[in-house]
Image (cartoon, rainbow, N blue to C red; front, side):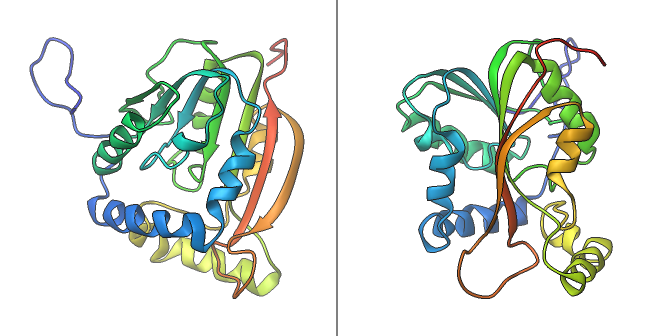
Length: 229
């Protein structure tokens, strides 16, 4: 459903609009679940979660089927209209209650400290303002709440770093829905004031040629129990 400005009757533009990339991503991501092993990574990403969860950048909802039964509710934020429609369809097939909501990572349409966990999955590469988005993650997460992250970013040796930076400065973001290859999600979480838990580097796909987007990290972070910032 399109957003409306309160009291105006005018329909607001979606915060993100990449219809061609959304169609490509919807097809590619489904095949990657098994062909590239992403489905198994989603199992590890979400294992052990409970309570109220907000997922930021839910895409076409491929995480939904992996949420454990201890999760009481998922609020899934997705700004791109086509992907959001696919996420709604996925939510209807999910055993855990999922509410798919339009919105941008930099301005989450939810109350502060309302969630036990935040899930960020292949989204920090494409948000326009990473510090602001992670500030919103911190705002909506209760003190002591957990962040689960599965992201891709800077990796490989000097040649790969140069390739990633060159692609980021040229065509890659325009062809890939605003995605950037050389961002550093772990450093961004640390700079945003989260306490980092265990995390591991992994390649997607695990075997085969290494692509600029292959360098991923899977891990856990926490909002400190008392905010000192």
